[in-house]
Image (cartoon, rainbow, N blue to C red; front, side, top):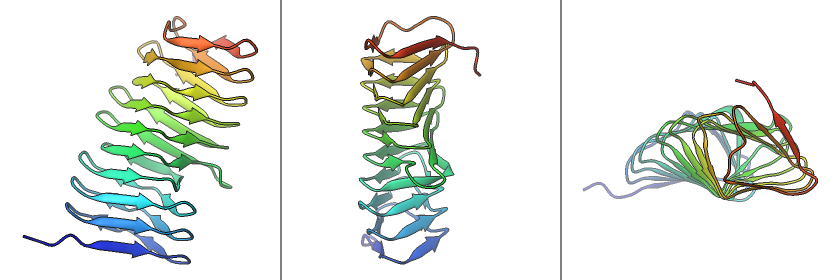
Amino acid sequence: EQAMTTQIISSGVTSSGLTVSSGNELLVLSGGVTDNSTVLSGGTEFVSAGGLAANTRVSAGGVLSGPGTMTGLQNHDYGSVSGVLVGGGFDGGTLIVESGGVASGVTINRQGIEFVALNGSVGGTVVNDLGRLQIYGSASGDVISSGGTEYFSAAAVISGDVVMSGGTVQFAGDIKSGQTITLGASVTSTTLL
């Protein structure tokens, strides 16, 4: 039986194209960067506060967790992503929660986007100023803060989401019953695809 190995990306180091296989762990310390890494089923990537994971693919059965930051436009979650920040940097960041993928406790900051595909699922997302949560799948317990935007398609399933004063909700079809819209929030119907 193969022993578990932990690969550590320390401050000032950028590693590209790493693959984290089953039973192994990739640990990104503050100041460290991974780009184009792939976390396979049974593998784990942990991004410390101040660490960056760019353009990461999390396969079904793979796990990526924060509190560090995901950046880049090609982050694909077919597995599980939790606790990370998305965006906030110069070029923001996009996390695509693919069909079968789950994301929990993600914080979307400036120029960050969390895109939830059909049959993708998110919970406990916090969308801050200039962040965006775009839902085609299911979402629960999300909070849209002032300056943040939530968009959901007609097919989306929403429960327990709260849009705070200054936040924006955009929707296609009908407004969802699973939403609490705070006084001072902006609500608009849109045909955005």
